[in-house]
Length: 267
Image (tube, rainbow, N blue to C red; front, side, top):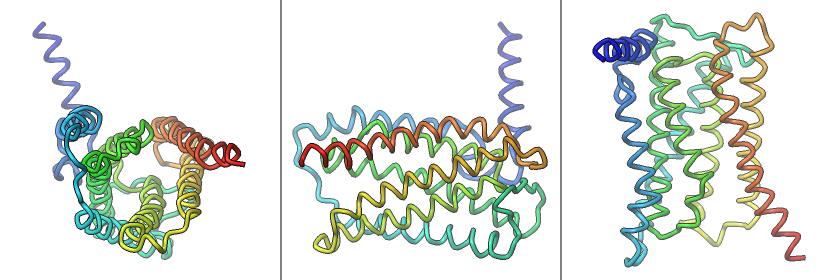
């Protein structure tokens, strides 16, 4: 038994410390997987069990002010990250959009990259408040499997990306996703501040934008598998692609049921 425990401990230290990028391994919520796993567990328990039970005999909370502030923060952070990727990495040719290896040096720009990767990871944790707001407002129908799975998956991908592979080809994920989120949270902000401005077709096209995002990312990560000269680790694509293909399937299924089948039934 003692040997088994030593082997498990040794393997954990190898995966958690030796394989980790030393530039980010001491960042907040990165040095160990336990805090993020606890956050994900508590989130899932709250939105699926504790929250609905707590709200069962209560009126929905009025969170308009909090949601407005939350949306403004999300728009600012998403726009900021998209701008950083575009101006610091892609427009000046420092990063290649076709294939970009991970640079593990301590140059000033690479240190900025790893800090922004960590910030993106933090935003994915903040994103969990979306579902908490749904529960506290008794919008239980919004707490779908797709919604919860997507948020949990992004938290775990954010942790792995920050701890082991901060930078390189994977930065494109954060760039595209930040653009989509800036648009999405702008829509949410308008819908709560000026609902009379909202048009029914806006939400449909935002869903199309999300689907386009996943298609682009599948192509972005998939092509490195067939590019022998690309030095980006191929195991990342093998890990990321199944998750992203599943998310694409879920979003496409939602789109078909919501905007095609329902529309045909109303004719």
